[in-house]
Every structure is written in C-alpha cells, then in structure tokens.
Length: 259
Image (cartoon, rainbow, N blue to C red; front, side):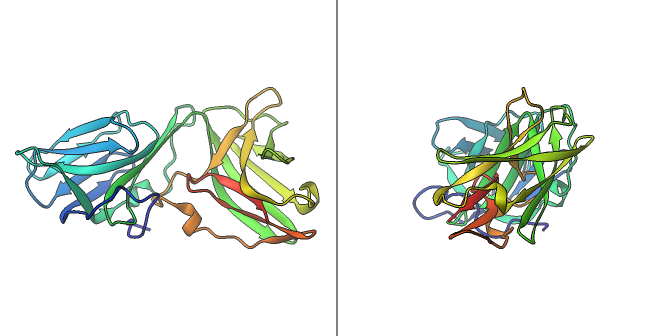
C-alpha cells in the first residue's frame, strides 16, 4: 500500500471534523513531512487521553516531524493552529507512505514507528510505537493443523533455546523457535494448545530469546498499515469442540484466540 485510506485505530475524538487537509510523505528514515492546504502557524500533535502535545512549526505550507522527535507510544491526533490560535482538526489528504514499507531498522537500536492514518471520523492521526527489544512478525501460514510464524528480533540476541509463547490468565502454551541469526520461525501444532478452554481474550505471542530472558511481544509494525487486524485475516483451525485462530490485535500484536 502507498497510502492510508481506510479507518485506523480508534475514533479520534467527538464532533465534526473541519475540512482542513494535510498531505503527508514518509521517508524511509521515518521522517514525516506534512503539507497543509491552508495557512497555519503550527501543526500540533496531541496524545490521545493525555495533555501531552508536540508543536511543529509550519514553514510555508510544510511542517516536518523529524526522526529525532520523541513521541510516546499511543495515538496522536493532528490539529492545524492558525495565527489566531483557534485549532482545527486536520483531515488526511494524499498520503505517500511507501517509504515505510519494508523498513530495516538498526538491529541494535530501539524500533520507533509512526504511521499516519484516517480515523473512523476521517481525521488525521498518527499511530506510534516505541519498542526495545522488538520482535517483528513476518509471514504467517496456517495449514494442516499447524500455524507457522516467521519474524525477526531487534534489540536483543536470539539463542538456540528461544521459544514462542502464548499466555492468558487461563492457559499457557509454547513451542520451540528455530533460529537463523536474528530471524526466527516457530510452528504451533493444535495438539500443543489446550482444547478444553474457551477464551474470549486473545493470547498475545511473546518471543523468549533465551531461557533467562523476558518474552518480547511479537507485532507487525514495519510497514504502512496502521491496523493489521482488518487486513491480515487467517483461517481458523479445529481444536476439539473449539476453534483456534491467529490474528492481530488493535495494537498490531500477534495473538492466538480460542473460541
């Protein structure tokens, strides 16, 4: 995909959205460049559910969010602040996000991702993640009673004893991860998952790099899709009287669900 055109995570606030538009171009480094359709003194990003704000000055029609800007993980709503100081919510114009696709971050540095998207009210917001370490989900296949997950670990080292784990308050399961450098592959067999449990909450997956290490949440962040659960949908597998399905949560974390 080269633009975010559909609903993103969350609603983005109450009330009608003003017709102030902003185009956006993302670079491979993660820098975001906004071009406003109407004059403004600043573009303001506000962390949803918080009073935290980041103010980007507008030069001509352009405001830049540099890679070095520190944004907490969460959803940031975008506003135009005219010279009179009366802010108006921005709507997304043309968003060229091709630079975010297939990013390969520094393997030893924290992974920071900022994806512009349109909320359900057609307002412009940013989905922001900051993970260290980070386990990036790659190809997921469901076939023959097995679920195979491939991915790559950033910010930590994989050992030959790495495992992929799923846990909720009522059940727990793990499988060995096969390691090749920073990459891993793990296959769940339905026989490894308790069939007698029906759990409405998803069991998020964690990659444990070594037996004495904490599990690292497995998520798919390094692309231009703000909400993976609406795009990547996988078939369910029979599990006794229940069914086992893998998919993404609203936070783009990979999870198993028994229903």
